Every structure is written in C-alpha cells, then in structure tokens.
Image (cartoon, rainbow, N blue to C red):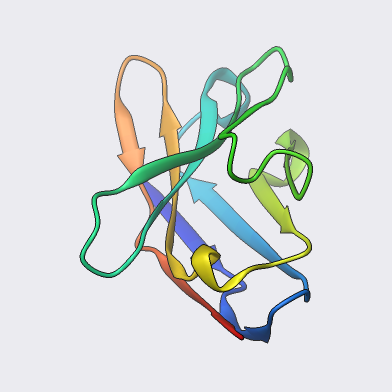
Length: 113
C-alpha cells in the first residue's frame, strides 16, 4: 500500500495551493480519507476528512478556506487550500482508513507573511 502526497510548496499569505494524494494497493472507494498536518514543534492535527459517503468535515481553523475532495476513479484525494495563513505552515499528511490505517509521506506547505 502506498499513498503519495504532492503539491506542497512556498506561497504567500492569502494565496492558494492544491494538494493531491494518490493511493495504490487499496480499494480506494472503500476507504475514508483525511488530511492531517504537523507544524514544527507541534503535534499532528486533524485538518479534514471525507468518508465514503462524501460528507466532509473540517477542523475549525480551516473551515471555509479548505476543501477536501476525492476522485475514486483516479484513486486520488485532494485538498484545495485558499486564503492561506502563516499558521497553515506545516507538513501535510494524507490518510486512508477503514479496517487499517495508511499514511502518506507528507508534503511541506510553507506560507510566508
């Protein structure tokens, strides 16, 4: 099983980025998906989730700015991040969970002020 995250980078405050995470080795459509992030010196925290039903849920700090989505035909999940803030700077990890939990390797997002 492999989850490959991409799309991170350096962006100015107020800008946008779109993260992608492509999975292999799992029946993608049967998994709930999520994004987490870990800022320097802090614990990993929940960002957003999209279960099989497609009903999304977000952390309060990103509600209204981030959008999680999934494309089961492409085995890929996305995180559209708008109105980025310096406090969004972190390594972002994708996650697939059902009976087992799988993590991607992380992609770094840096938001400059």
